[in-house]
Image (cartoon, rainbow, N blue to C red):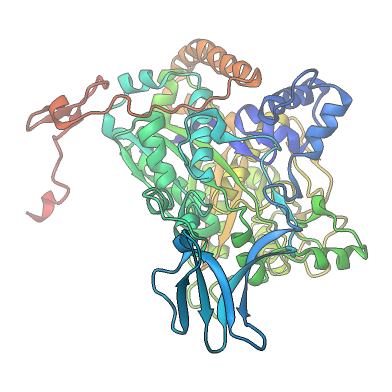
Length: 616
């Protein structure tokens, strides 16, 4: 009997705002929610963006709308990007001579240089031959000026003692803290219920931390006259988000790791947690991803690959002399590339039995995640056939768990939807052909990168958070940046358009989350709606257990609401337990049958059965 991985909490931050309690989702469909719900989202954005006074004033509302989602890059000036121009200095008709501070001389004096004293702290250099090779500080205009950025004014490092942490790790701390607090159950209570080795944390970044405080600084330092620090290499590792969450947020001693799968990284990690919960190996898991790739170097790297939407190409599509930054990403329409983004989204999963016992909030469940490679390829970034397999398996499982009726009439798919010409044809063919094969006549397609951009590792986490929002508010976000579907898009059995899709009372039973990563990293997750999960829990645990769950949930739901109210009021400090609760070998109790850890009521059992008993 497989245990069901139930989503009991979620949180984080992306270009639409705070992820928990559907605030970020409502920003996507702000024109379809009620006035009260829109006000909730504006209220949640105000403290993130440092807005004081009446956050509901027309001016402040417009400011929040203008300074969220995809927009012109604000992290740096795209019109003035720093770089070094290589040049040769010569002396004209005479030898080149210059004066330099003695402390600035190279450690190895170049051939042809003659150095003589000039002043107390300076020397004169005479250069023989062809002159001196130098790098001159210069600037250039970036060909890409659009990005999905966190709400303007939000600085996660200012909320705690960040100590030169890379931005991606700051976001991981904020996102995991938001998710952990959203469940409405103190983490200490979970330690009473769950043995230390039955927790799990799976989180990573697809590219690591590439700003100056991470790998970027390690690679740049010697070229810009600075020193590499002891943190640059260590904090740049792709698995560091999981390590930070374990060490500073939840203090987990359980399973941990980061499975890297390019743009499918989150789903790869969700697969780890889902499989282990289903097998009964873990009882609770934090799963997510954090990425902060908005640096000039990373943007230029993707641009030179031909992957990003460049300003010139966007203006040509629009027949305009002005770039429309807001509509830079146009999935399944006439387009020219994807739009890079940043963010962090995290989810707390528990097995169904624990979720019922705790009276936990039920936001949905993860039925499974399917992963398949592409086989032989002509090009590493080029798409292949593996994604047909992952989507088909997810559809088949949804049909098996529920019915043909649910799959055909109460399901939809979150497309990877990057906004590139290649993606619009290849992914639409996958979805359209499989819709035909499974008898789906009109399959709704969401493509939220149109709003948020492509955050790489967390991209499919954004899709999962949006799915929870659709179940809560009955709206599938339209692909709002497009006017119409491109001529080469396969959509005879798909519903793709700029309009939001409002659901009827039956809503959606199933959601598929699709992700396609460089190198053939294909993943598709199958999600079950809260109403479906509730019926499944009743069938397994009985009506009496669910009545008890409902009673216990009253306090849990209130605690969740209290946290949301506090965060909306500006209490945004992430959990950062630096140096607290550190244990050594002398603190634990050891026998040949168990290990007891301070802070946990239940021990780590050493009564491990022989899995190969039939072979010995």
